[in-house]
Length: 169
Image (tube, rainbow, N blue to C red; front, side, top):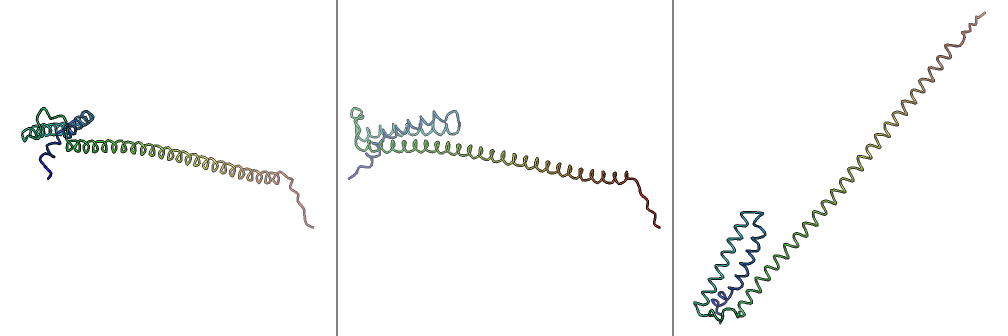
């Protein structure tokens, strides 16, 4: 039969490792957010207290003595393994999240560059079209002016020509 009390109390090293993890998290968060730093300190204190309680309750219920405290049993190693697996999974998740965030920022920068290049190209095409239109308008005005000048010169020639009168008989 499994002694659940022993299994629970044997987790004092795992809870102590968890307390150390909370302390490490506090050191990373302390300057960024006051609320989170208080949360991590409270979790550290609570898990440290639970670890000490488990340790002394194990001595009280005579599962171990202070002399036989450090050689860990199978239940303690299982708890340590589970806590370490959870911590490693959390760290891997955070690293992956940070990597994905960097990739997303890189893609956003690339998209912004492409958008800026497209906008610049569109502006340049618009300028070229406006220049071509202005050139076409200038050429049209020049052609119209040349036609008007040609008509005026014909009229001037006709006006300058001697008038011949022919009388009819």
